[in-house]
Image 1 (cartoon, rainbow, N blue to C red):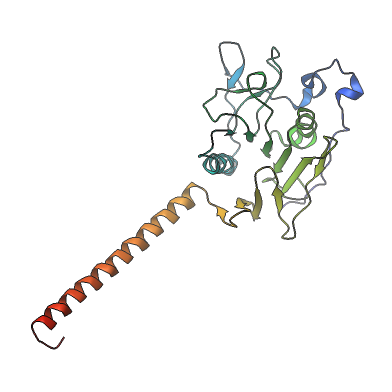
Image 2 (image 1 turned 45 degrees about the horizontal axis):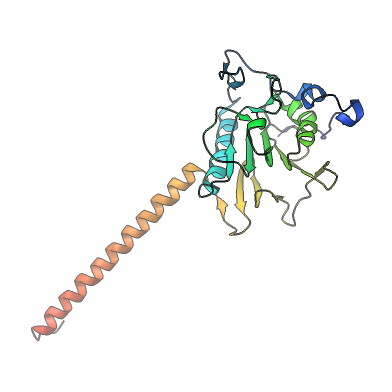
Length: 263
């Protein structure tokens, strides 16, 4: 593993220091998403797809895990929206004012299908956002994006480092009472806990998994879920076999007893 480098952020810039007339997109222009052609836009010209690809298979699998577990976690609720790699437009009329978090979760928003998340058409900003670092954009994710998410009011912003750029594999930030990000301190187990999601994130040599704080259970990915399902089905089938064998033996013994024979 390469030597980790200390985490740093650019000097904080906000509308209060530059003038309230400036928009978040202007203040945090360096944090905005840069589409990779060819791009697809909706009828109003807002980006919803481009040609950007995951940097490697692990980045893609981790991003898929984050999204699938959150969607499954809140599948019975009609007021929670979770998405991965979705364009988040935060200023109406400014098509460049867009970021694409690897995961975002919104409490109070319908889970219906969207081409993109347009803030002016939605009830609120995301409550949680996360980025999985890749070589192409890690500096922007680490040094620039936190100030934008803070300015927008995203309650928690997490960075998952799978390329060994940061002092720790997971960096979490949470808005304090002054709406300023503060580092999320590690729990007594050394993990980071999300107050927003009610989970903690475990790092097993870069293999990240959520643990449900309410149940203590580790939330598996799809492959692990399938293995667990098949194992449960096999155990159930074995149990049924044992019950059927026991019932057959009981029937045989009853027959012998009725015939007056020694079982």
